[in-house]
Amino acid sequence: MFNTHAFYGTDGVLTLSDPDGLDTGVFTGYLGEDGLVGRVTNVSIQISTEVKFFHELGSRTPKELRAGNIIIGGTVERAFINGALLKLMLGQYAENEETAGFKIPSFNMKIILDNLMPPGDAGNSILTVYGVMFDTWQFSLPEDDFVLEKLSFKAKRITIQDTEVPT
Image 1 (cartoon, rainbow, N blue to C red):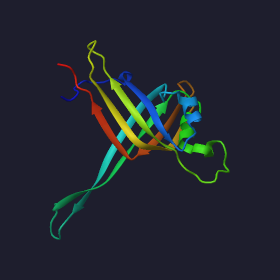
Image 2 (tube, helix red, strand yellow):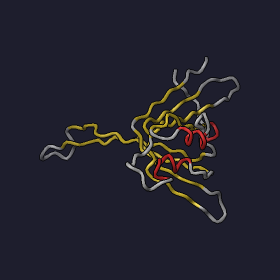
Image 3 (tube, helix red, strand yellow):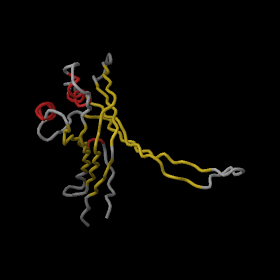
Image 4 (cartoon, rainbow, N blue to C red):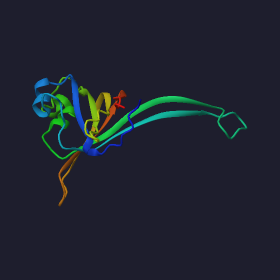
């Protein structure tokens, strides 16, 4: 049976794992052993498939539709600035511009949605985004609101796991 719960943002937790080509000490130093990214808000994931049309001469409607490339991306906002996510975007280049080769670190992003209402209910969903690479970083210092950093990312693939709700 599929999970049929509605979730709030407070039901979600974002963790990062499997640093590829990144100093593990830096990764755990900023994010902790469990890779939990704190004070996250407005996590969004978009998936789009390029659908290609084939039109025959003299026909206004497509005669065939073909699935093209799949694009997975999204954004993450965080109300905490410590350089961790920027270092995950730039790798060694964040500290030293004289790096031999510019390699962007990739990692896995896991979003765990856990709704414990009613008490004792074990139904939850886990979205795992694989091969994530941050491609933009934005810092916002508003006059009368929270300081936020916002990153956008691209990814290789995504899976979702729904745990069965006891009946």
